[in-house]
Length: 202
Image (cartoon, rainbow, N blue to C red; front, side, top):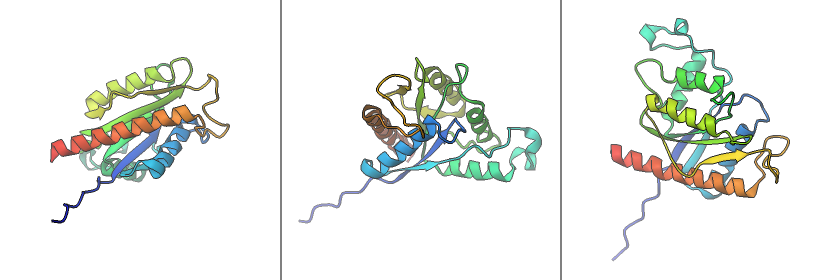
């Protein structure tokens, strides 16, 4: 008797958003490291880095079609968010909160009758000073309540970037082996949780 074929895990599309617009930002580096880890050792997970730098400031005056039409850059952004299976937020901490650019992106994809974020899994990774971006992470979780995002609770990744040994190089690349391993565990947890949510919906 032939053994039953083992079904492979479906490939999950992870829309990854950096709250920093700076080209050599640590948070861009975290997303690059996530891409590398998925290619190297996490089959079934694919990172799609979604650039939010070109989005206009959220403004209902820019909306058309009774609130369901948006500027081209916003429509393209909303399409990529809607196509994702789950999300990875790389969020700096500005004044105890998320950046204005990230909040703007969250707002645009929550407008209209189609709520792009709803009922999908998400994870947060941060880098910063003494708290490693933890206060921004907490605020982002609070925002996610209204958006119907489902964040993984553990593991957390709040990198204290100024402590030795160095965590990032001058171009923002994640170079610390322990931090990369912690990032890998976040991605694996996100994958498991996203698949669980999909099974529940089916």
